[in-house]
Length: 442
Image (cartoon, rainbow, N blue to C red; front, top):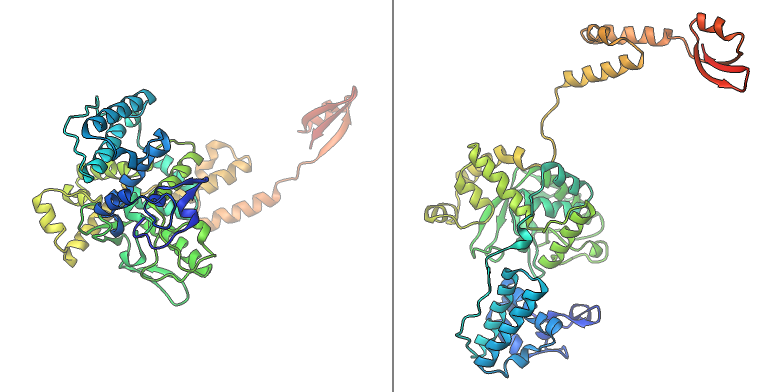
């Protein structure tokens, strides 16, 4: 959402209703000074993701409950506490998860506290740590993830792989005013003729301080598979006239391609919706964040197999880790340490990639082709093994001679009286025609 600089009718309304942004845009008729001051205190103008998330949750009070946030400020602490308890009970009856309700209550209390309405009494939410919507969620298999990617456009495939293989949060990839940019891929370059090249793969991805949930930069890697999709996506944008440079966002709204030469990053909400739609197209109902769970699961397997260390695995998905982890990995990694991490990540790629990385030996492919060809020529199974051992040139010569010498089959119409004669000569009965004719193959 970022700094509000100018009014945009499309951004201030959705389906004819005011959006969250309309309450902090001074040119909007829905502008609220109280909401803007609170949003600004949370770091909204500087692009705080927390501020934008809190703002959307606060505005649901108006959209779903019919209660204006400004009306909350007219209540004393006792009445405010009573109202929040009533809202909690209504949400529980609606079937919202306890953790979701707790998040809304936290936002309402934050807004009230900023305006000096302090609620000291506890608002208890039963089983607040429970996540019933995630209880039965199972992470995808390699085949399921590959199925999703095959049915997705190149942009969504890139986003999915950045989460599933690089461990990035949605808010790192895109958050409207900022997001992952070309400059965050230091080993990627764009040639004068519009070709995207990677110095080496897995390629380094640098998560800047302003994108990091930790508030400090960290590193992860992009798989060879992800690099292929990213290369295709960027080159397509370049062909359509976009000026792709260091500040260009990695993931942009597709509808802007070909219309604007400098598109902005997607918001994390739009990005999440896009990934969710990709899941639904493939027949799955997972949340987008299941991709990070998948990444963490695969890295845990890699740690168990001693392919990487626990410290590296936590670092790649943006976790804080212990004190030694923070000191060594977050205090400016040396080139030797980055190469050590790269080699460690490369060992994990087989677990992270969605495609079959096993190379089929050429001899195996040759034998399979020979077997199918021999079966088409009606060679008995007991003799096929003998022909597989023939040298290539001898086998080709045998196929050429025997395939060309094989008589062509034709169908003829004969009478029932003539049928015994044809059968004795090796003809094959096909079907009966009328009461006194049959078709045979000779």
